[in-house]
Amino acid sequence: MASSKLLLAMAFMVIVALTVSAGNMNQEFDITWGDGRAQILNNGELLTLSLDKFSGSGFQSKNEYLFGKIDMQLKLVRGNSAGSVTAYYLSSQGSTHDEIDFEFLGNLSGDPYTVHTNVFSQGKGNREQQFHLWFDPTADFHTYSILWNPQRIIFFVDGTPIREFKNSESIGVPFPKSQPMRIYSSLWNADDWATRGGLVKTDWTQAPFTASYRKYNADACVWSSSSASSSCSSNSNNSNAWLSQELDSTSQGRLKWVKQNYMIYNYCTDTKRFPQGLPPECNIS
Image (cartoon, rainbow, N blue to C red; front, side):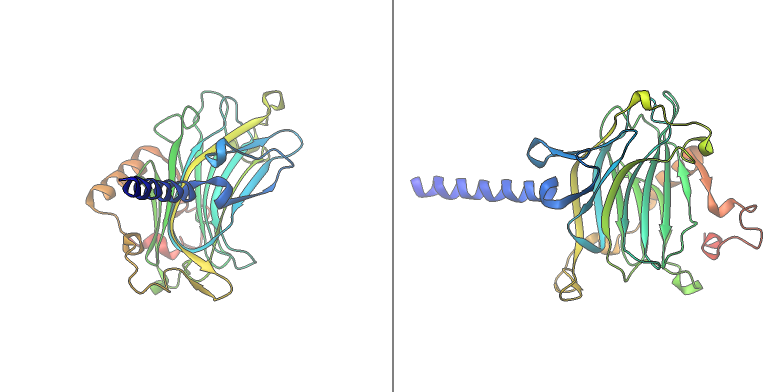
């Protein structure tokens, strides 16, 4: 009986350890700047970034990934957040880097946040789509996810897709698929452009501004720079469904709903910006 209890206790400890390691901020992230303005709290369950008149703050993942499904719960800066930007994104390094962006542009109290998304491939971006949200992202935590597989990139908010960027290499559009990327996040002052094109400036009497993060999960292919391979390529029996995931009819309907009701900017309809013709991926239905 005693040995059975011991085995049960050990099994429980293993389960707990696995659960904690999946989302423990101390184990997953390094604070990279901010001189104490970024903090990991509650035994690694919570990470906060702060911004004041002198500096913002930021962190990055310890691991690099080559494809994955990344989830993070965020609670954005409350009140008058005009001029501030909370960035949460995947990126490689260098002049021909790849990048997949969520940026949350602050606003005056009572006005909606703008969710700014972009995709860079081989150093080229200019693929912005912007949205408002159907809830107050400062009142509670919400889950923001990036699905990145060889066929598509999908941005999700609380499981609802808000944007899909498909692999269009067949028509000459580069797609992020060969550069491993880290997760980065930062809270910083961008009042020269972030709120109403820079017309509304940061009210520093409201500082410090704070954004909070929790329940991080990466169901992803971890990149090993020493072996130049990922954890998925070394596992021939890999069963990660997200590697071939696409939107089913229900999700496509939700995506259409978001576009019709909450999209406020789409580079694919900005003919003034692209007088010589819209980017080729914009012509794909």
